[in-house]
Amino acid sequence: MIKHFPVLVIIIPLLLALIAPVAGRINRIYSWVIAFLATLFSFIIAAILLYQVMYSGTISYWMGGWEPPWGIEYVIDYFSAFVLAIVAFLAWLVTIFARKSVAAEIEEKKLPAFYGVYLLFIVGLMGMIVTGDIFNLYVFLEISSLTAYALVAMGKSRRAPLAGFRYLVIGTVGATFILLGIGYLYIATGTLNMADLGARLPGLFNSKLVITAFAFFAIGFSIKIALFPLHTWLPDAYTYAPSAVSALMASTGTKVGAYGFIRILFTVFGVRVFLEQWVSVPHFLIAVSTVAILMGSILAIAQTNIKKMLAYSSISQIGYIILGVALMNPTGLQGGLLHILNHALMKCALFMSVGCITYKTGITSVADLKGLGFKQPYAMAAFTVAALSMIGIPLTVGFVSKWYLAMGSLENAMWYLIPVILISSILMLVYFWRVIDNIYFKAGKPIAEVEVSDAPASMLIPTVVVAALCLVFGTLAFIPVSITEKAALLLLG
Image (cartoon, rainbow, N blue to C red):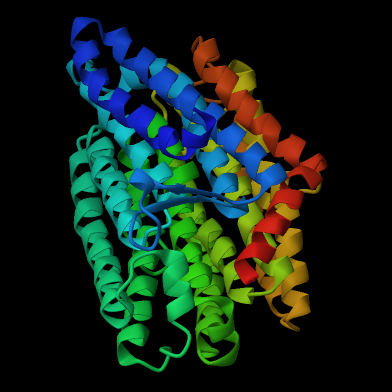
């Protein structure tokens, strides 16, 4: 069965997504058990695939035995195996976290449907990662997007349906741009296989069809990953979604969107065109990512709702990933790839910590968190570790990726990007210190005068594990660095 793992990582959660709502009607807990098993199997398969790629090289799986480019091909290389392992692992941990959290934030009658949609969202993400067919990537993108709209709308806040609807409208515009880009490339080349597209496009880069296709991809994926200023759907979506959904979407959703953009940039178009012909594209992306890094942090400072603060912080972090991509040298690209992992861990830990607060107190305002550090010590310790990592304190994962981005900037003689990274880190220190100061150094209503304990173990354990990994991969950075180095060299050819 091992040779079928590239497709089983999709098929297993897909089949169980159809079973979960039915089983949940018999007993609500069954739908969660099925989601847990589906994400566990996916994680195990993803880990085995990463191991196989590291020791045997790229895996190519032909659907139905049809040879590409005629048939759909699933491709597992260093880049896709790395991102797949991140998504599968965090999906499994968030599923453990979700049992208590979701039950407290969603109506009981909606729980079976929730876990079915939840699994389909994960299927869409993992499908985008493993496919080698550009139209198949769009299909999985739509699966993840449609289910994300529904998951956001299930939040208990009265503003959740509106946030989901806004996400739907803006997300549909982004998906339309991507589909148009695919259509133009197909007209120009007659193929949908990404590797085949990469072989046929050289010599066509002066074609108006190909230039227009790239423009559509750039706009469409910028919307999907919430790259400033096309970020307007993200703050409300993350703020009013259930806590488990916020944690999963923030840690995996935009990262997989970034994966799709990077895959198309380097596998389909190739780095040479951006270094020799379309030289303005990297400079434009650097300018946009720089603005995103700074504006995301500035907007986060202005927020009083902690989830909205974290949402705007994500906009800044997307800028870091795109900055690494735009540098288009091995060190810079490696920094961008590292930040996919690092930001996924940091933001997952932050949103799960906030979920622990919400579960026990219902508090979302930064000002109301006074004294909480001594009432919920484990959750607040996890939050603090992840916050320090976001700032980029040495021996945390945030420092590692920022270091590589800084070195990549120097390789391109773009020393002026280093102050941007430093200023953004200082801005992060400002808005995260407000929270840390409140939870540890101030006491006041309502926390100090009421009995508040830590969240249940099923919520705390995954939160602490993810926060601990921010330190593990910060001190043992050679583990992700060794993988991302090979992934960056593969993408750069």
